[in-house]
Image (cartoon, rainbow, N blue to C red; front, side):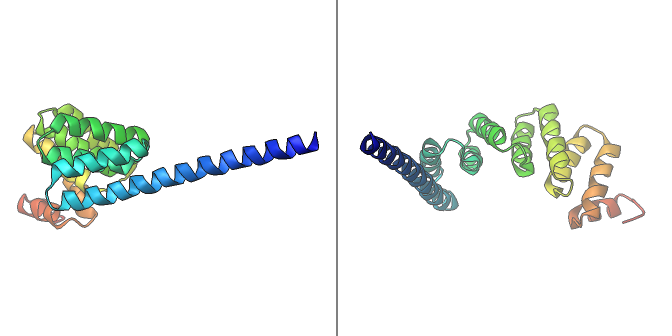
Length: 178
């Protein structure tokens, strides 16, 4: 009986080690495909980048950065709805990324979904109150819709955070503090 337990215990340990090694290899392979995709994206090979990001995601379905980057590649290749879908998947995995909410908001804005874009920019600001791009993008939407007061409030915040473009806009629009 002791030999049987020893063999069973050894077999269980071997299976656990093999499982962990396979998982580590899949993660390493996902990172390799991600790195390859980043190079392709950098050379404007969006189709190749999308393929490699997809392989990385297949190997590691919780790889939020791969979804985020694939979304950027899809957007760059004209697949706007596919980009929104990937940003949404990235957000589901990592709901604390102000950058991802801002990126998705930018595409929504580009597609005319002002309310959705504003909501994403607002969420980005809630996540990271020092994230200037979300203030700037929300200010632009507010200006476009005629909400100069709301835009000014966003630009004041961006200026306080050190953004020179916001400071210049405020100065040129007679906001006395700037």
